[in-house]
Length: 106
Length: 119
Image (cartoon, rainbow over the protein chains, first blue to last red):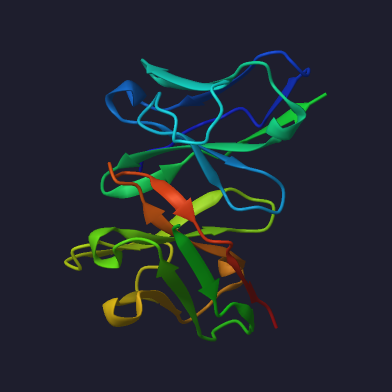
């Protein structure tokens, strides 16, 4: 079965850029989606189809996908961005999630 | 406004059964795929089961196949998950999620309902 990998944690200072990676075999041939989950809350879609932002998501969130790695970038990170971030793709008629990355804003 | 409201969670003994429900509103229920996604305590997200908008297909994760059954009631805009032969590893928050218009992802999630399997 298809698997995605993410770093367990990323730390970033306020105002700096956080970069979260998601790796999978030939991932560039699939769409990647990103969800933010704040503690005690439901997931929220922040990026769809590699690099598109849903309405209401701040412009500081951006995405890319190339080779075996998709990347979620948070520019000018704010304290409210501290959360778990999950990547997700679709493979063999199944939704596949990455293990999640905890972003800490120090 | 899209709303997904789950109910039916609780404490159940190993081997027992439970039925979860998701009341949907704010969109055309029969036009969108809906799924159940779970999250064990302190763990990541796992897709469990899905029902196509057309009603023609239902799918299950291997971990629940043969034990869980997904239902849809269009007249009540309700998605249900009948869970049987429950195991400790089924303990999780179960979310109802709506597939986005372009497919392959979820654009709205419910607040979740907690299922605890324990003696």
